[in-house]
Every structure is written in structure tokens, then in C-alpha cells.
Image (cartoon, rainbow, N blue to C red; front, side, top):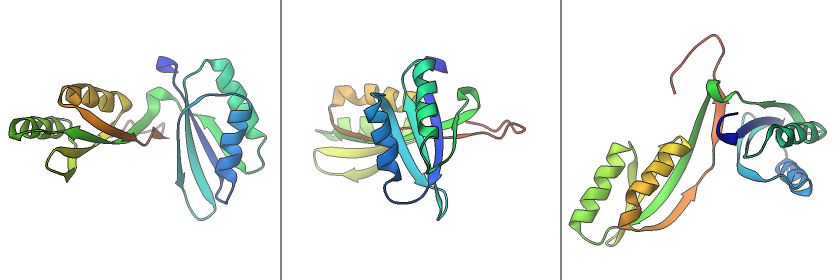
Length: 167
């Protein structure tokens, strides 16, 4: 995987306690999770996307251990060159005056984000995209004063092999 990031997709039964079993197994084995997102596929199944920042040996151990869980239906590592990755971030930014407010709003527009909340001294930007895009936005607005950040973590889907698609 590029940049030491390993993205593992785990399709599980959708029932109470499965996320706990997955995360607890990783904790017990002392595997460090960088991001973890969960979404329901349908009434019976859920998709867990786990991002690890480790070498191949750790990745193989994670896959091996997760395969031992009864609730796991399918597990695979996503190919980074053939995967669409996205993250959502909410960033609360100080805007002390009209000029800084205008500048920050312009930055949000350039990054194709949205202003989702405004107060007298701050605003909240919503940015979606790759983790690199979100990191670049955060660096750009740091001089204005970042008050708080909430990030979802990476969610991903592998493209169909026959179709190229766009990212």
C-alpha cells in the first residue's frame, strides 16, 4: 500500500456487539487503528472500513485474526490505486472581523466545502474529500485560528475492475 496506509474492508453480520468484537480483537492484539468507519449495507450486513498505518506483517495478522470471528462474512484489503477514499471534516474557525470571515469563506469555496454554521466570532466549515485535501484545508485556515475539528475517518469503496471511473 502507498504511504504505509492499509485499508481493510470487513463485511459483517449487522447485529449488536459485532463492532465491539472487531475493535476489541484489534485492541487485544495491540494493533493500532488509524481510522474506523462503519455503515449498514442492508438489514443483515454492515461494512467496516479499517485504516492501519503499519507494515504488511501487521496487515496480514489483522486479516487473519478478523477471519476467525464468526460474524465476519468477507474481508479484503482494498487496492489503493483502484479505491475511492473519502472523509468528512467539520472545522470550527475563528472569524474575528469581516475580512477574515470573507477570506475563510473564500477558502471554503475553493475547496468545494460548505459553511454549515455561523456565529459572530466563528463559523463551521464542512469539507469532504481525500484525507490529503482535508489536511491541506486545515493548514490553509490555521492562521485564522482553528477552534475545533471533528473528522469521520476514511470510508472507501473499490472501483469495479472493468470500469475506470473518476475519483
